[in-house]
Image (cartoon, rainbow, N blue to C red; front, side):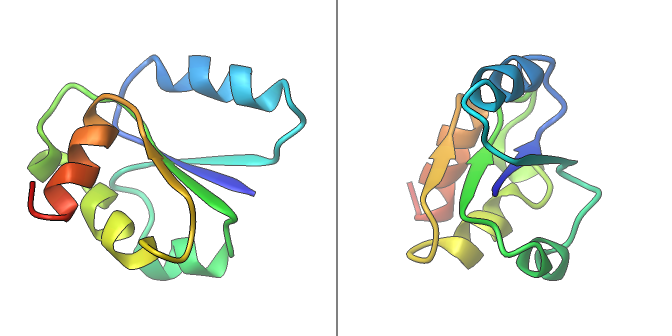
Length: 91
């Protein structure tokens, strides 16, 4: 299952539609509506951090989730999500 952390960006659902077209199970959560424990309980196979209108430090659980799952899951960041990956690793 792919978990997407939605950073309040309308483009998130373009991503969901595109990836969903490949038959992938997807769960989407806003960046302030799920905890690390909640994410862990889902046992995701992949993590995607969405775009958003803010900076990485204002992207809710995005950076903590990246740090938590780093080295355990493939993680993709799009726009803000990519910036959050850089921020999570000191960039």
